[in-house]
Length: 164
Image (cartoon, rainbow, N blue to C red):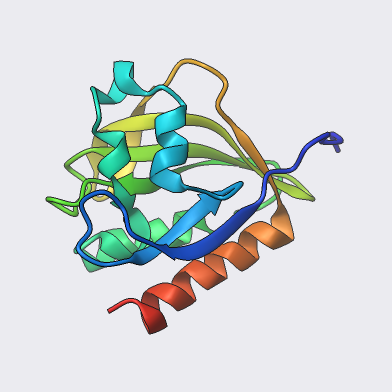
C-alpha cells in the first residue's frame, strides 16, 4: 500500500452550476464543485474553450435509464487494484452519452480511491465509454475509500430525495 501524504476531501452538496435553473446535487473536491475542479485542470485542449465549466453530473442528469444506471454503477468503487473509466460530467443540453462527456480513470486499492486522469469520451458504445482522449497534466485526486463511498451515497440520497 502506498502511503499518501495528502488525501483530498470529497463530499456531495446542492450547488447551482452555470446553466442550471436550480441547485442540484454535485460532488465537490476540496470544497470545489466538480465542474470547476475539472476546469482547473486546463482541459481546453481536449474539451475546447469554456465547455467544462457548464457541465452537470452524469449521475442524476442522464435521461436514458440504462446510461444512468451505468453511471452510478461505475462511480461506486470496484474491486481492489482495479481501474475503471467513470463518466462524471455531461453537457446539460442533451443529457446523454453522445454530447460532451467528462470521465476520470478511477483507481481503487485497499484504502483509497484515486482519480488518476481526466479525459473526454471520444467513443461510446451502448452507453459505455470505450475510448478516451486524456487531458495532459497531472490533475489528480486521492480519496479515503470510506469517505468516497459515503459521498457517493449522499449524492444518491440528494438526487433521489432532495432534488426534484
